[in-house]
Length: 93
Image 1 (spheres, rainbow, N blue to C red):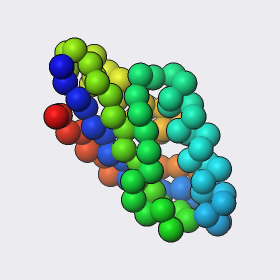
Image 2: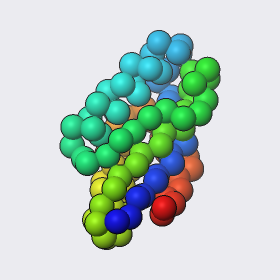
Image 3: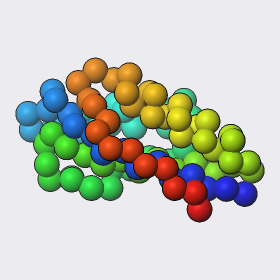
């Protein structure tokens, strides 16, 4: 069993308040949970309206499957307009 953790620091260009930021994040997190076998949460910068850090976690029997889920999740995040992934890191547990 392998656990993969993807952390993604993002800039949200279209957010001009915490309410707008949370609306964008909720859409992204809902879509991620629907499409992939992952858990996702905002883990940093909760009080900043144009910056966030998301943690995406998946569990699989082999590393290749876990890596595929995390890469697909990152592609989906990148596909949203108005948000840019500035820093990403993958850890294996």
